[in-house]
Amino acid sequence: MEITVRIPVTGDWVRFAGAAEANLKLVRESLGVSIAARDGVVQVQGQEEPVCIAKAVLDRMAELSAKGHQCQTGEVQDLIADETAGQALHITGEDPDDVRSVSWEGDLQVYSAGRRIRARSDNQHKYIESIRKNDLVFGSGPAGTGKTYLAVACAVHLLKQDKVRKIMLVRPAVEAGEKLGFLPGDLEAKVHPYLRPLLDALHDMLDFDTIRKFMETDVLEIAPLAYMRGRTLNHSVIILDEAQNTTASQMKMFLTRLGHESKMIITGDPSQTDLNNPAHSGLIDAARRFKDVPGVSFIRLQNSDVVRHPLVQRIIEAYHSDGPHH
Image 1 (cartoon, rainbow, N blue to C red):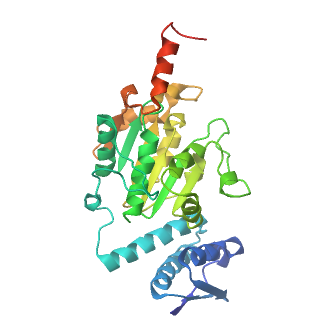
Image 2: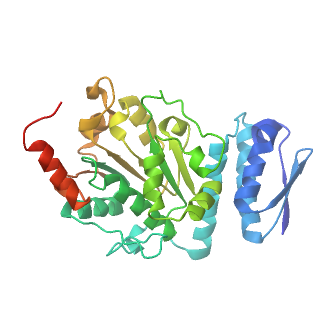
């Protein structure tokens, strides 16, 4: 199938196509279509469904550029996700936000064969149920309680059952002043140490090749918190880890990124903030502001929810048996 999209003369080409036509390249690679552009005319070739999605994305990009808006790659990614999801709804007639149709009983469904992921305590069960029922969930508690691991597992569970189109994993980077970026090299080299714990959780649920493929096709994105500014994510699960290290203004910026038919899960331990003034923690501030807001859930995991090697508990007891150590 082949279609032609004409770009209005009032729209600047670079605003539409991006520097070095990066936006067109993103559409081409994400949807697997051929794109040829010349003199304000874009020709798209390929299978019918991806061509129709590409046309809808390009039409929207043209509208934005005609209004003087510079189309950023993040916005183009969101447009692709929206139109892809919309096409799927048109074909199936399903509501992607109807998570009641997703099976949450027993193990969470992930991509690694034979991997069993399920709640191991009452609080963990409440946490998973809260994620199922609510679009904004705060999970707090000490290290080892599974708050981040289960959040990632729920996101992968929804992705595998085609209820979301994207997983976004985010962390603040306090010591680096939020000026992190991806480095040259392979997947392992690209992920900064601040973000590595999120990738470690993913490795339990997806094999390396699947993670690479998802990152290359923008199904999976791992980024510092600063990279969220200006984004709006639809049909996604967005997880903010180590949220105790956000400021109130950063938390506000992050929460307002929530798009249509998406879920946000915010995890952290208020007692372990690295901010100079812990009272300024965005996680603590959010708990105060949203405790009675409908659709927002707060789950507190306890020491009793820690699931680790049995020897760890005996190690902790040994250190605590004769008082504090310095």
